[in-house]
Image (cartoon, rainbow over all chains, first blue to last red; front, side, top):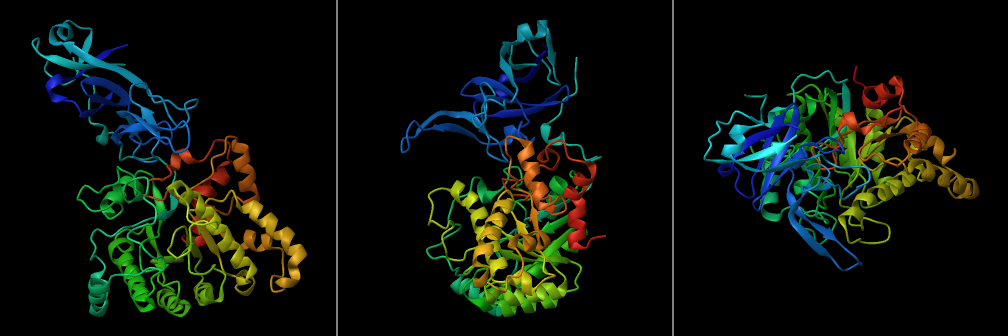
Length: 137
Length: 369
């Protein structure tokens, strides 16, 4: 499993997402309230660029008339057919048995460890004193 | 150490080796509110500014149900130059026509002049939409063909519009909507069928329309999802009316296309009609043959929505009844329930049937060589 340095932390503030292609795979990395998540940017249903959809919450109901809205900003909704996936896990909420979008662990590493490796820096010049968003795949 | 790195928006390759397809339901949109004005007499421009349009459906500001996505469209379909989804030819070429190797694209404009109470305004708006389709779309990209939009509630002016456009190769069908003031077999609509038959043009019946009736036969529902499935109920009653009022009997060369209402329900509707017709035949003696015969001979069906049963064999059974020669592939671009051509048909279909499904049937029906 290779670890890819994809951006300095200052370039990915909370609420932003970054699209890139690594080894021919379209990937999106999100910063949600300081936590980082990586997802394959392709909907397993019909192949849309899934991560271009809006981030919403999860509406659930135990009984008709009772609606619970949780995981605000953690559910990605496909820009085509509205299928919902949990960005933490890639779990589908429409058909969890058959559909899951590949999730990639993403986190922040200090420049010193990134320079040491075993990381693949993209076209980003890496400095020891910075922190970097790193995705594993 | 660097590896290949680029933005995902650039990832889609412009090169395609995909098989050529027809897309029988594309929705072109107007970029601005006044885009039709150059095609409308001053009298109607002023009328729109002062009075607006009044549909049969009361209390209506916008569609009766909120849609699942803005403008009921794919979120990635906003043209880069601005304007609503479906309003840019160059972006449609780049996003739909080129990458999917669309050889024939049939335009079905919505929110036109259909179903408007003022019949003169309705006719003027429909005619304007037809001019606009040529100017903005079909004359600029020969893959695109237009549907003749007609003021459906006034059969005579609708027939006049069809006759005026007949023979114009920019147009390949007449467009009606499924929700009208009355069921589609009623006599007020017959001049439309007569003119279409004379012109050799199929009549497409697209889901939607504002006829003033509830979307479902059991009243106004609560949710958009009920409207979505209500299209098939609406199309069923329209088709039953066409058969039982004798439209197919009276216009034997008429071809109807059921657009955007599914087709899984077709066999059961035909079976019920046949059985009931055997018992109540004397009520409708003008229906000379079992209803299923008219349906199988004179009706075509677009995909999107296509039923998606758990067992693909169930889908194949339905298609076998309808006929592999009766289905027309459609994406419904740019709408949110868009079907991706390469992902829509399950495995296990013969090469000949795939070709008919994706292209051959449409070219034959619409007379495209």
